[in-house]
Length: 84
Image (cartoon, rainbow, N blue to C red; front, side, top):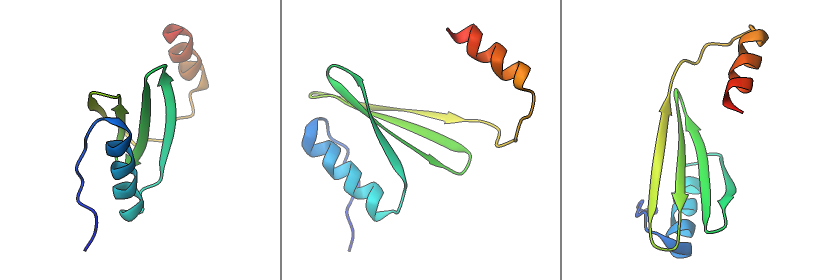
């Protein structure tokens, strides 16, 4: 039957969401991004997602863009330097 995607805050919601991703065979990563939250990141074709779980809220960001392969490492260096 499968797991329905019910996204809820807190540990219970996080574990249910991870089970959903596992069932869908979506490779994901878990990062601690602050003292009180975990971020689950994963990618689908053309889109990257970050889902943030806190004790009392959950939200996500969606990033879309080009799938082009780039070779201008001077541009990459400028991007990285301008972000720091």
